[in-house]
Length: 144
Picture 1 (cartoon, helix red, strand yellow):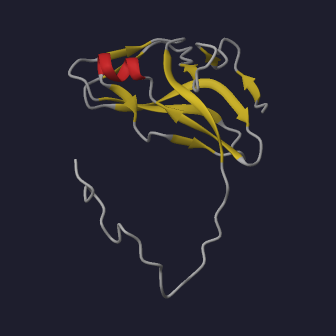
Picture 2 (cartoon, helix red, strand yellow):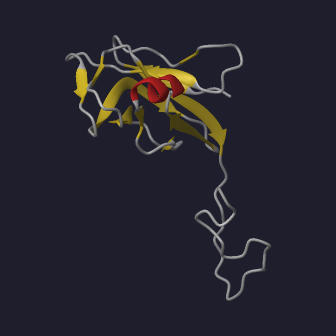
């Protein structure tokens, strides 16, 4: 599958860090200088890239485990979805759940992109739904 990429001068393309990685690392593009995220603060971080995703696919924006584990930095709307008809700049909503401020520099790996097939559903009105073993149980009903 091919995704077309348009980049600002100085931005960096997404890159798979290993041969079998599912997610491609995406980097911050901050020509005006670093951004500091205070504890509890969230910001949209520009990447300087735009994508043309084939119809029938989405690109998910997911957190990087190292940022989460070491600093409490994650993607706020994880996973974020980039639809195939979106052509604007990819921005990543990062939040600092840590206890210390976190500085983001241009070129820092801030998230990862995962391409995934999607199919639109046909929602059909019905007066009845088939029973299931789970039924209406949710929000922890299957245990810890």
